[in-house]
Length: 217
Image (tube, rainbow, N blue to C red; front, side, top):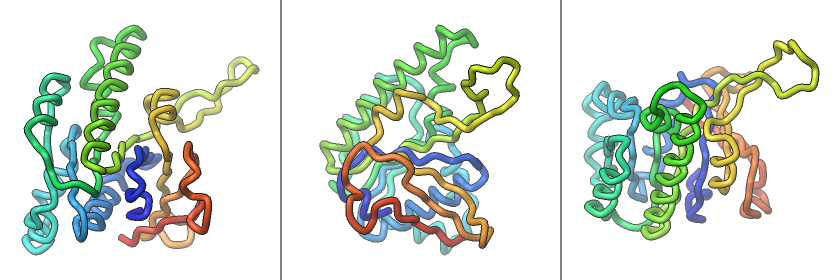
């Protein structure tokens, strides 16, 4: 995972199982703060809650390194712009947006299709702002995405088949250089596989191409 971030990319990290998200995000942060800085936009507050519930030793190892900045922005674009203008962390490392689902929920007004489209447009604007901010700081942007079950697009009527799809649809695919899916290993439930599924850049051309990145819990 660290090798991917060196390329200054936008990476969508997708979860079919939301229960493993906090553990994977914690592992990613711990890996990066050993040698880089991390800016964490915690929209759904799960990561902040996780930090507060750590034992003292683990908390100090993560939070007191001086390399982790956890922010809890609102759904306001001006508020986000103020944050980006105020904080200038060291170059290199990653920015984490956690999660796209919560951000879109905050931006959605009502339950109409029009409200969802407007939220998607606002989300695209915020991601563009974060991409520009990340590139200015030579950081990669990791966008956490919890997939949602949707009916398969089939010609046959009355089909009850469902499939997991990314929140943000075509927009997030267009914005991402890499889309990575996570899953529990079938051989060892304590092992999580992080698998590169799609790439818009030829950055995994050599030995790392479609290689599994494993996180041990």
